[in-house]
Image (cartoon, rainbow, N blue to C red; front, top):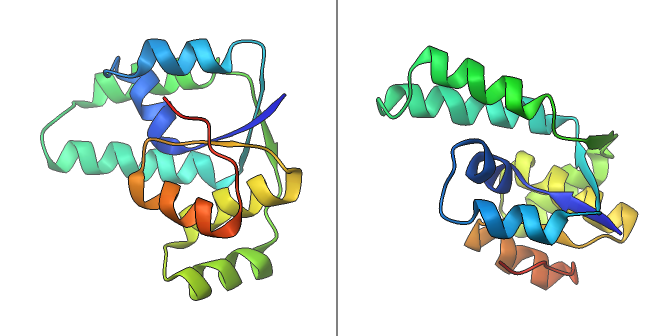
Length: 130
């Protein structure tokens, strides 16, 4: 089964957060997919953690090494569709890219972001619940 995986779920796994075990269990045997923007959104999340003094550079590098081992198939997001979703739903483009991939591939979305979950529901995107 294809699973569109959001940055929030990746962060939870990389930093051993509360839902890590459940995320790994629910994705076991699945085909993880995401837009290419996942790389940049992850980088943005790491820089935000630097600003909050939550992590240091070595922790970020370790997280990126782990990330590079996660088998994710990257799919091109249709930017016109994503920008349309961003406009229509008043959300950031990063979230719209995730939603456009879930819609394009008819795959459920795995996210820990409650606002993204609500938007996904309005678009008819199936959610994988943790």
